[in-house]
Length: 321
Image (tube, rainbow, N blue to C red; front, top):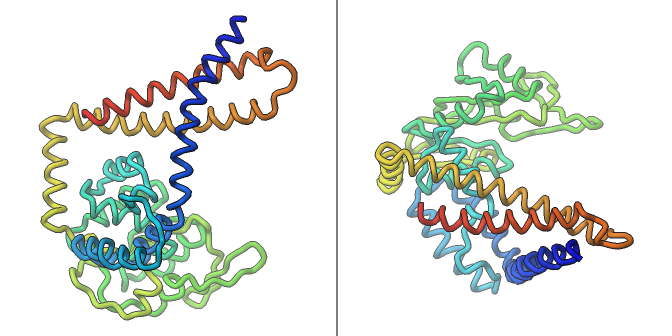
């Protein structure tokens, strides 16, 4: 009787939460194609532009096209929310990426693009972030014209290290083009890259980053087609956002630390809740015999309810913070 009451109480709260999830998923299903198309268009085209042009492109050009073709998107469709989460953005901030909206957009474009990024970075904010972000992947900082660049790049390609070619001009050495263009030949399970007259086995962890200090470079169309241009130039609005973040961090370090802690905690909770939900649904679907004999299932249901309540409370605290 005790187990039966516990099971009914736990399933009752889960039923309410799952019913809300079904409504939310049902509404998301109607707009998922539009949201993904918008996010893909943002990643493909927004990189080279500053904030005002990005906003104009999103609100005027893309929005008009979607309405004209009756492609439905979320009322407040935001590619950044679809492609990344607050926890990831907070991690980038800890790795020296500024916290303003444009910098977070740049981080999202860089991490979600298939093509290698070419950063327009006169204030060196992008390069500072990449050095911190990729330091655990044995990042090699290289310059065009240095005598060891070919050898260092070969080592990075074959061993899966990250390579950063910094301070580039407007001319890109032709020897780099097969790497930037990812001109690959498949041999069995291996991907072969031709570089400097050699056939190199491309390691799946290899990453290439290109950076220029020029504020308004003119690259040939083939570079723009093969690499993802990302404009890291700081704007007045961006600088204002960064200063606000730094002032809060300095004047109220307790609030800044609390915010970071809450974001990380919420993210961990959501992952845990998803794991519990998957396990519960699996057990319920495959239950054999008397469900009251499965004490682990009942305990998991109760734990899931507890986590869901904690997430709700932490979300409210996070809003206030």
